[in-house]
Length: 418
Ligand code: SF4
Ligand code: SF4
Image (cartoon, rainbow, N blue to C red; front, side, top):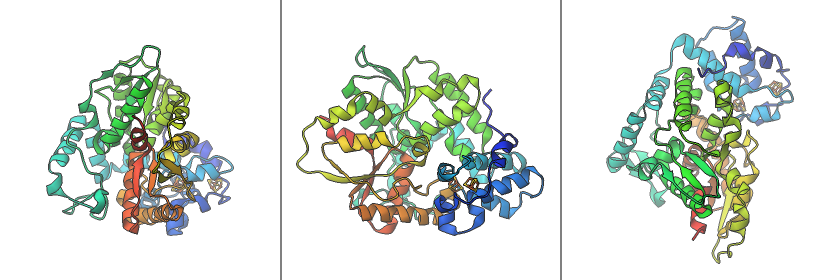
């Protein structure tokens, strides 16, 4: 039975916080709000006080705990490696356990657990797109025409497709016998919001002759439910995926979404022994492509006469897992790309799961800084490896009035291939 770690099991880690404050300068929530309750040591102190029965789950406490992007920037700077994002996530689970899920949390849990409902909402949204949404100039996305719960009418959304990615393809796409077999864990972002990035991934994999399996019954990885504190949903989705993915023999489970990569590669192995294999089997697409020698193959292509200036944004869920080199290696090898490293490429974009739902304006303050770094780099495109980051980056760029586009690196890879 999949079981998430409870707050009570984090006593040792909580005690490791020496309140040095080294995390403060690197916390995007603190940077935006300059409030001690936003920073890691403040949250750790609150979690500790909750365990000791010294604090109630009143409004102030709930607000402070909701003000974390689970970005892991504090962990990277912490001398004692205190996993604040895990402690905050466990505190949210405890809040939900005692007070029940928030209305938004209940909505997240219902939709994520029900693939049919997700399909229906996505297909309906795609079909009714012109009624529900207005297109933004330059095709950079769309915004809601009408007020809707939990989605700011100021938010740029991607144009929805009425045919999700997984509905477009058979479950098995054979490649060459000598090549590995990979299982493509599409995640919801690629399946519903950015199916063209999924198509781009297939193009790259077919170019290499890889054997591809796209399991029809795969579910959401569950990471949005971690952020919302919906423990049973996370555990249920993990078990569903374990059963579904286990039906297929494969060499690797490949993701093209940073959140799915962290969900499967980091959270699942903590859920129980039956998930232990995921730790080594789950690979980010760019790690896989680099291991396959794809960067060298791209670099051997003739350079394009007209090239694009492209910068890279590190998604938190890859950066904290040490995956920073490979996406850049692929980008730098592309024949139509002039790569530019932007300042603070590794800072959070401001999405943070439920954070941007509850605190959209602060999330935009954080995103605004990122949009400025993108503009200052002189790049016309910001490429990344996470559908959620693409949505947030494009939203931030649009608010800042920049003309840049946020894209998946895979979109650029497909463009370079014959
Ligand atoms: S979380 Fe780490 S960096 Fe932050 S105050 Fe505690 S020990 Fe210091
Ligand atoms: S996980 Fe990110 S937002 Fe949360 S306390 Fe750490 S640095 Fe701040």
